[in-house]
Length: 153
Image (cartoon, rainbow, N blue to C red; front, side, top):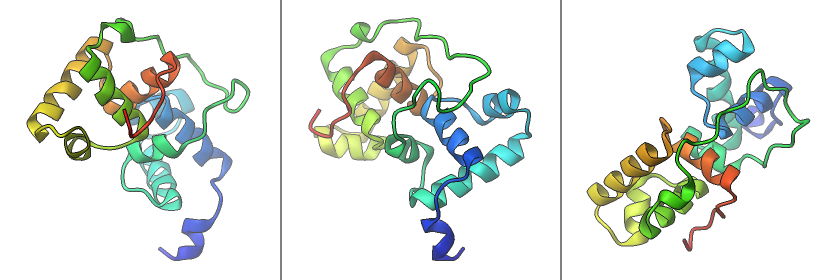
């Protein structure tokens, strides 16, 4: 892909996809809500990643600006997490702040001076406590709860 495309602004559909990625939606949910195929969603997501110069949805979600209520019409709102953020331990809250920045488990481990297995365990427990399916969904829950995203978590 040429560099011109990677520097071009997102199309309205790509902006809509990025907003849904930031909210923690899966490809299946996006396809259903937007009335397009999962394959089309995956193509849009890949173009968004390329244009933003990132490798993962988590990194893209971390770069996405906060959504405004009028930015993208959503067919259905996301339910709030079943457990409050306050159910997390202080260390899990630190890990969640790292997730909110968009860093992965290996980087979390280095940043917090813990083993990768411990980081994985913390992430798994956060997902279970918040009743979400992915780190992106946990990031969205953190943003909704007002947890600040900071690397110095």
